[in-house]
Image (cartoon, rainbow, N blue to C red):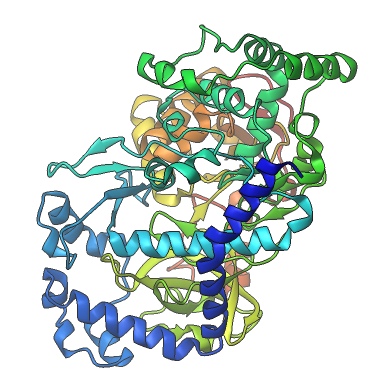
Length: 570
């Protein structure tokens, strides 16, 4: 070990000491989740009782969990949205007890309008604490890979997409935290935060790789494994240009880059002719250039989501990165972190009982008028629940539509794995497409491109190269294939307008365009009948689903042929 490396490792241990102590205290707290959660809830209510939301819901009367439940209903984002809008206008006391708001974290909602989540000091404290404990545990579990204080490739979004009328920035939270990191920590990231401001996906991936190639990278971090897959494929497809830029210390001039970003990138464009020649010789010999060829496979760790529908991407990652350990990032969203994974190759993580107050509704009761609501210590292993969270930044009994399953316990605190984004969502690459998006887009496009569509469902279809959504139509609804092709193109564009995350995944190439998959006449009548028989519901209340989240549906449906903007086979 070189002297520089020795000093860096010692410095890392010194910096991580308070976090290691914090981790021990958290693990101890997991043995008494009821007491920890109740104390946290009452503290949140006490601090926020002077806000407009607190006054409207009589937080001054809350002395127990039961009191809180009487005063505040289980509700989605739309319930708290009017208060958030007042904060966006400058009236911070509508929802927050202190005036300091760093930004609004942006997320896609169940409507075309994006959600705004207030990020205050309490939010950042919880966010950083969760990441720090996750990171220290991950480093300690992989001492043999010698990854401490080595560069990380993280792809984050734009921290400042726009501003509210009160001048509060709105953007990507991971991009914001990367922007405000201390200089020492920022040095550990091979990709600068401002790359998130590059609008064109191909350019963004290319620049990230150009910055990472000269560094001794140990980790790749992205929420969705499809991003890691796309990054690896870009490395291979652009290897000649990347190695030329690495050799010369340049950045190709034909990339679509804002001039200001190109100027900021100059200090990151290291020149390394020797490394460029070595990698070029390897690429000439093997005909490829993958991350496992560039960085030692024995020291790479991948950090991404592994639950829900991510399994298809995870299966492909070893082809590009080698047999690298994969540590799930945990159940986290713009709304906050919910779990902290402490092991590799599992989506399960311990509930973050220090950060938010959590409640749960059993899966089968989500549509009941008076569902059972449970606390964390009341959950049963093997059961599935919808998660509600109450935070110190204005979300109360917030129904985020995340379905989770209990896989075990740390002490008496449940370990949870993410299953799906609710019972009316589909999620191939992080787009969180809702039935609302699907039906709104259909209504809009049918006005422009009339089609005799009697019944349909949109469902995700897995393809190793480029997954997509299939619009399943019956034969009698396909009378003019050329008209249908134009309809599909318009419908695909409209889905992107209804759901900005869908548009982003399409633009980055992680999702392909919508295909029409044609099934025999009468298929949907028979399918609906069988579904109704299984559910035991009444025909009068039955509603045909316009969106299916089942990834296996394509394999079970009797598809006759496929219609798409380009020829494909069924």
